[in-house]
Image 1 (cartoon, one colour):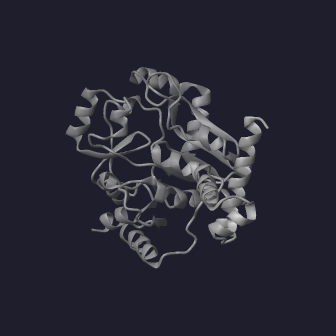
Image 2: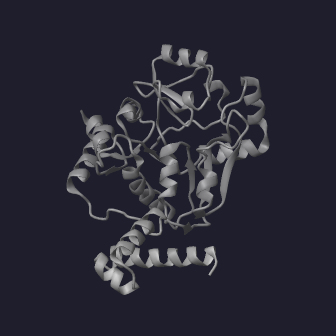
Length: 315
């Protein structure tokens, strides 16, 4: 038996062990007996089934306290849809939120009505896509809200459209432009290109937008990932901005603000309305001011977050 055959057999055993444990409700002793292995190996096989994502764990029971928090957030901020994940004791860890977010995305993709669905970028959305099951929905269109080329010319590490294309069998439209151009004039040239205009038009008219929310403190992704200069960062601080959505910045009142670097962005400016969904996936104490401002300004009308963040937003 070569190494590939051995690996395949091990994964087969892990899948069987995971199924017996999580679906069949068998104990590790019972699994060991069924598979003809030791109890210790049965335990390792169950662990591997989870590590290899052969088994995806989801909480199906609606915890009443979390539902109550969601209802309060809806009433406070006039939201259409809210999901609150249980606290796992790690601030801002997407491991709790991403399965809930994945279910919401999958629910919308299950619609029989053809939809255009826009996706922002970032760590939260990437974790959400990784938590999704493989599905086929060729009647929908998936479109990027932001360019997919990083400042150094490489593909953006947190680009979502390319990743979701591996999970969802649907036509997808990446925005063929840099996240941020070197100059305003260069950005204007990109926006005149027909392929860019077509994608931006799709994104602007999307029925649903899924976005992350970026905090604008010293840990801001746009700063740490090299999208703006120190000079532009200083300007942002003077403007009193607290958050960004798909590269568009806003203040504590949830009002979008123009700055030098935003005039170089190629992204779509997200704005919730009565006719669409704009759903933010975000959690963590550092993001609370940015999330609160986005809700206050009705930039989004949906939120998927965790329990500590929900409580902080209601204080």
